[in-house]
Image (cartoon, rainbow, N blue to C red):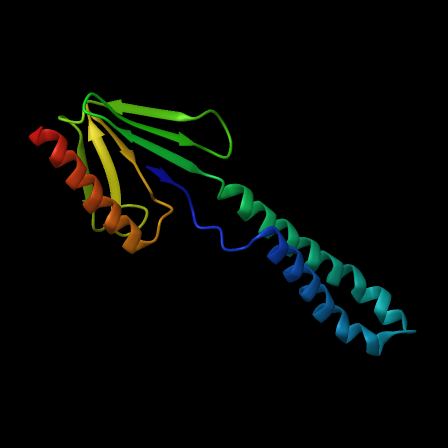
Length: 149
């Protein structure tokens, strides 16, 4: 099972958004052509365009998370590829692994964790609330099937 955050803005969508934002931000400047006020306001408009560009690019980089869950009769393995740093691994015998849905008290509502051997790891925190509920149900079913043999 591969889990990753939803990416709604494609590279073409990013380019179109930035072009549209710049075009709309320039419209008020047409009335200032030939005045010194244009040069006083221009750095602020360019700073706003640069700030939006930086924020969207940063958000895109931060959402490049991938979680790979491998479930076999012998092992349950979760590998999380973060945007920075090395991948994080967690492994447990599926018979002893427990999946828990925390309705509140976590960083997000309906927070899903896997636990075993005294260690608890999150899974799918970047998913929507409904997707986390479905993830919990599917993982619970799969672990129950493995426990029954």
